Length: 354
Ligand code: NAD
Ligand code: TYD
View 1 (cartoon, rainbow, N blue to C red):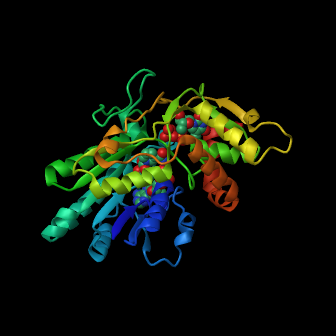
View 2 (view 1 turned 90 degrees about the horizontal axis):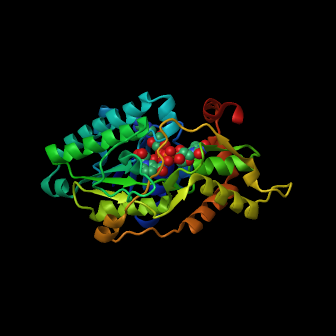
View 3 (view 1 turned 30 degrees about the vertical axis):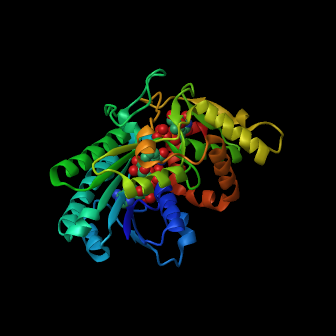
C-alpha cells in the first residue's frame, strides 16, 4: 500500500480518488483535518476497503512509527501542509510547525522505518514530497519560466516554509540515502478546492451576490494546472522518477488574475445567468494588495515531459469549464465547507468588503 498524508485536502483528496480509480493498491490516508481537511471530499470511498483513513498529525512521531510498522507502505506521498499564503501572513506559526517541523518528523519516522526494511523492499521504497513553484520566488515579465535549476528565493512565510521542507527532503537523501523525489507544481484549480483560494472564492462569492476581491491591479500572473493533471504527474514521478531529482509540474497556462476572474464570470453568465440579466463581472472589486505579493509564476515543465512523458491532458478552457460546472452541481459541498471557522477567516481577511 501507499501512505498519503494530507489526503483530505484539495490536492490530496483528488489524488486519492484518482489513484483508486486506476489502481487497486490500498491507500492509508493520514490527515489532521485542519480547517482545510474535509472528509466529505472522500464520501465516494465510504465502505471501500482500499481506503483507510487515520486522523493524525505528521508531526506525531509515535503515531507515524506505529502506522508504518503496522501497514508497511512501499511509498509515502507527503501532501500535508498549511497551504494558504494569506493565512501565512496573518499567522506564520502553523506553517513552520507543519511544513517544517512536521516534514522533519515525518522524514525521521520514515528513515527509521526504511532503514530496517529487507534489501529488496528498501530499494523499491519511495518518499515523494509535494511542493510548490512558489519556492522559486517571483519572475519579471520577460524572465524565462522556473526550471528545476532556478535559485530558491521564497518571499512569503508559506513559500519559505515549503522551501525549508524541500531542503530537508534533499538533505535526507544526500546524507542518509533516503530514496526521495520532489515535485514543485504551479497553481492548481478544480473540484474540491477550498473557497479561500482565488478561483473557488470567485465562484462562490459570485453566486452569493458578494464582491469578487482582486488584490492590487489584478495583473499578477499565475500558471494554472487542472488538479487531476497534477495528480497524474505525481503518480508518474512516483513510478519512474529518478531518485533525488526535482520535477517541476505546470500547465503552460500563464494568466493574469483579472483575466481568470473575467473568464469565471463569463462561464457563470452562460451557465447560471444572474436574475437581473447583468454580468457577474459587475461584482469585481479591487481591494488592497497582499503584502510582498509575487508578481509572476511560470513553470518550465520540459524535464517531466522529456524524462517521464507527462503532459497535461486539460487545457485551461476545458479545465475551468469542468471546475465551474462542478461547483454549480455541488452546492451542498460548498455549504458544508463554509463553516463558522471559514466565516471568521473571511471577516478577518476582507473586512467590510464582504
Ligand atoms: P490544502 O490546504 O487543501 O490541504 C492540506 C491538507 O493537509 C488538509 O487536509 C489538512 O487537514 C492536512 N494537514 C495540514 N496540517 C497537517 C498536519 N500537521 N498533519 C497531517 N495533515 C495535515 O492544500 P492543497 O492545496 O491540497 O495542497 C497540498 C500540497 O500541495 C501542499 O503541500 C501544498 O504546498 C502543495 N501545492 C499546492 C498547490 C495549490 O495550488 N494548491 C500548488 C503546488 C503545490
Ligand atoms: P491564491 O489562490 O491564494 O494562490 P497563491 O497566492 O498561492 O498563488 O491566489 C492566486 C492569485 O490570486 C494571487 O496572485 C493572489 C490573488 N488573489 C486575489 O486577487 N484575490 C483573492 O481574494 C485571493 C484569495 C487571491
